[in-house]
Length: 223
Length: 396
Image 1 (tube, rainbow over the protein chains, first blue to last red):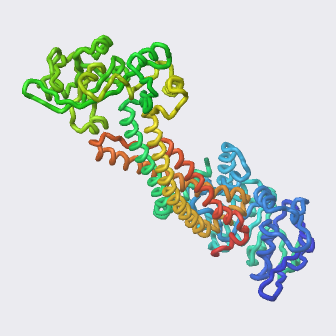
Image 2: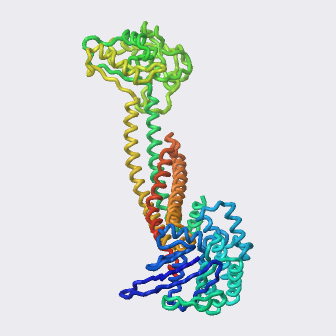
Image 3: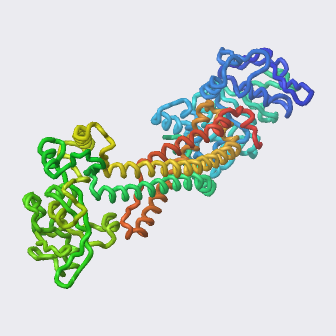
């Protein structure tokens, strides 16, 4: 599913070269629920960007579904993000002008899915996260937990190979956090592959497997 | 369609700003449409004035008759032999003092043949026009417009009355409908008008001999004026030993052509000025689109993260710029229409109707579209080029 081989990413900050990722190796198998834990500045975000095809590594090899990513053009990367990856961000990242259902519909529009099928799939996805009654609401009319559910629905609607969640509970209170994590558990049980990035041990522990990241290096914590 | 809807929505989200941005386009379109429409309407109404003087008419002047002057008989022969020439009328005019009873007035007396009636589109109210026999026998008959009849005789129904022109009595055989307030009547400066047989005029005044130096010709049905002109030219060339300086043929069309050239020039000049203001409006659009792109960096990041390609983003912002332009264009055309209605209402007495010129409306729509594309391209490209991670982390 995901295979990182000696992946490096170097940032030039002033005169100093910072190894955000230093020969990182990671293997995620289909239908796995993996959490990647590390303090801020450990290279978490860089790892997430590379796994999510938002950025390309400077060295090493990244295989997604067996295909090497580094050779792709920007448009091909957009296509990969569109079809293979579902993002859930800490700050929800919904488009404020669009209603819940339009936000969920957007990746399908980019795929060129027909209108009738889009509506069907959007409905299913919102149903799945329990928000079908709020489909017409704008993000500002929804609570934080509900916005994150919309974001999860948007990630699910394309039936991606991988759901990539970056601190999905970071902006939520503990009760809503539990609800969202419960939802990830359910999604995992239904056979989705999930990579969850967090700095919170309690959250990380809910995954079946934990990978630790520190100073750009990855270490398995448990298997 | 989806993209246009989205564009409308994001424009609607910032109505005040959109309105101010569009103002540049609105004013530009207004300037273009109103100015060009004004020039066009004015030109077409002046042109129709000119052509009401007789547009299907050629004026032939003979300046050097080389000893073989054109006679009335020649004109009749030409009409008989040339199918493209419908009618010929010698042009002779004289001034005379007209009297009826104790009333008197200054007259422009036109010497005409029976063909004059056909060439100058005159409308008879009663009686008849000068007939061929009147010309042949130099009959002392006249045809006058109703205004002249009312002023001099006192009433319209004056058939059979005799008016005297320079002391010679002429019987009124026909009354013509007054011409509208046209350029011709303005130019005649309040003089009364009377039509008498050409041959009679030659006896009335001394300066009109039997030689015809000026005459009108009209084109026959099925022939154009140009064809008639060509035939006439060949006839005269033959007669005057191929000397084309001996005569001249001119038409009202030439005046119309000159008017057309002037109005074209004005249109290009005014259109150019208006186009500059449209371009300034376009720069306004570009400016605001750049602001919009910066403001919506995060949105762009989100869209890219969930799979929007460069092209998708480019098209999205381009459509937004074009929609903004087209909205401004539509409003500008609407306001122009209103302004022209108002101007028409104010100048209703001048009998010129100012209307929206269809061509300039189409032109301004195309121009606005072009401006939207040209000035939208840079901001849209800027949006499309953003890297998803940079855009996503912009402003938190």
